[in-house]
Length: 230
Ligand code: SF4
Image (cartoon, rainbow, N blue to C red; front, side):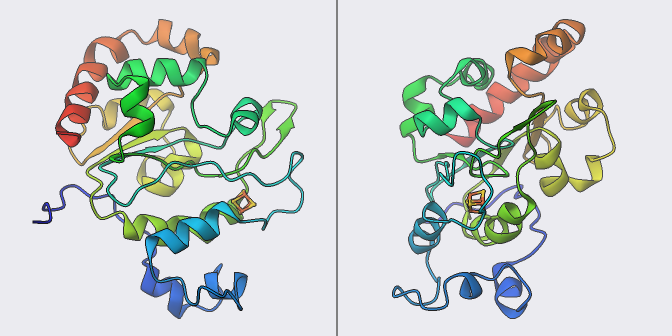
């Protein structure tokens, strides 16, 4: 029997709306003669996404990286793959991922092989680097793929949000808050969402200055993960 859906993240645009709106991003516009026909099922949708070459100015070329199964119960939403992730073809296979797994209370095996763990960044390909670090995810990526994919993830009951771009899409009401405020606001996970600072070593200073994150937020987060994956 299908599990009741709890605490789902609101969806800014439904798939049916996307289909009605010809301006959109439209999958049909992207793939007008797709031999698989209209995009009607999740596997077809993700295979189109994996083959996407929409962005022509990516420094290392398109290489969409995500980990999704329609049975996902927890969704991790980051910014975009970095250079190392692009090379490895696997999300969070780096020190940031080690810290994230520690925060979630998950080992590598569960993180990468449990179909209930989904990883779906705001940008699916490495966007390149600028003066201040990696560039933002190309907006067209979320505009094209995000709503139809989220629409099909009916089992998600916990969403873990990392970074401003993910907040902007999944929780726009928190957009103007500082990271600390957004983390505190969602810290109880009451509506099935946790905002976290990015687990990158670059945030070591923030973590040192905000020790409440470890004592107040992480136990609740681990508990929510256990609940979602049980
Ligand atoms: S970043 Fe997104 S829209 Fe651009 S090529 Fe990669 S998958 Fe396609």
